[in-house]
Length: 601
Image (cartoon, rainbow, N blue to C red; front, side, top):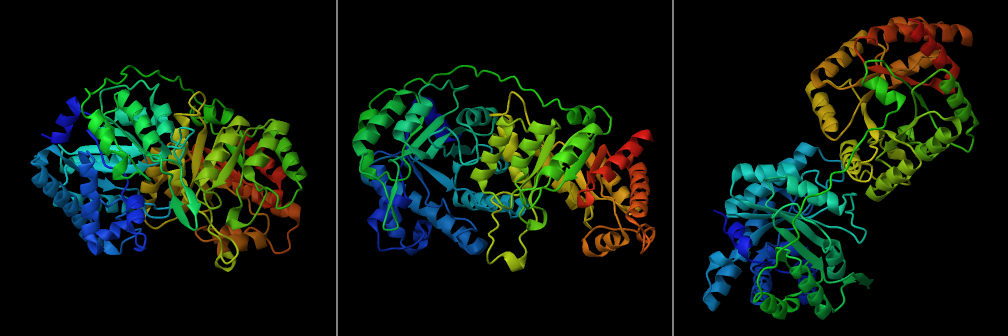
């Protein structure tokens, strides 16, 4: 039986406040990552824990928020720091209870696990492996309460919680999120959506907010909430909003105001209250003494309103799910201000009943007109549905979410999500690639937005399929990861060989995914030789290259291109769910000829 679970049924839990900012203010000459004080200056950490216990805290968090591979070298160093951090918290409780005649069982230690900032570039299985290692270290140290703190999304949360419970079914697991004043996390998770998700996960014992906002704003967020169950809610606001002075982060001295707001939060029936950045033990002494004499208030419990959700009913979406093969055509945005060719091409594609026009996003890391903004103009002026590619290479999390919101209000409802080609080595001295997210994590963000901001009319998004890897099982796992994050379909690289057709068929059968086969006409022998020899992973059989003569006219070469493309489309007919045409050198009329011939059978 977990004692914290029983304690929260009848009592409001008082927690500690900040460790990092308080440590820095107490020991300004120790310019270290505060977690490393567990082994460098353990007496300081024990003293701070003791101060919070003396102020009335019943739960203290281990000094391990940043104890992970981002700040520590190797598993052994992580393990030693976690063991030290947990031991110091236990030492503080044992010492405090011995001095005050208290029972250590009435006090609690939360194994504090912060986010691992993988920046979308680590193998996700490696990130989960690291989280599991951290959990195992805490379990071996004796942890029974776990706090996943300052989360911005739910991407890894369910997996971590499930792992903790698989190791100790009675463990008490808390998940807290950091929101800004608008009610959103940095990753775009809305406050109300968080409440629904945390309540629906039966393995999560408690949830709530920490960091991000100060006490008044946290009170405003909480005061009108109808909670869906008795599951404990945690509220740990910052002391205020910081400012920078001579390179240091400074929080104002506002303990009185903070305590007034935390008293208001207590009155809402919030089950656990405490503090985060900028708070100190002085904030809590009188407050906890006063609130501890009061009966635990009842929080507002009721049912959540269900949001009616729909799906974009474009011709593309209907065909994709009806068995009729949609036609998608890709155009490259210009590298200058000349949009006439794009608009003319879009008009021609509309006349030939193309279902979706897709615009690439700076392929091969070469700057072009923004695909989303160009797509908005094309869709508005031509009236053809547009699907911009969105690359994670050039945008941070804030920009990615902002792009989605802007596209949505301009009626763009289809997207192709790609990680993006990396910047070439020669350009990295002048061009910075971002990669806050990879395509899978970005799809997870959009999936959340589909359940929240876009719930009344969900957007449709797909992913790129690089099918030519040696390990087909690895390709399948990546496809399934994308599908788990709401990916509805895949567009493949250009297909030319029978081996590639067979591989696409295998992937479709193994995953059940909707796949649109890539067809890119080769318009000359030079073009065919380049693709065959210079584009990694693209297999162009010799017989296709040999079909193009050295001295063919443009018309003769295009005739071969049509013939070859039709043969590929025929091979893909029973293998893919549609066709994805890449337009060579803006030859839209060539693509239209091929589409017309495919339809004629």
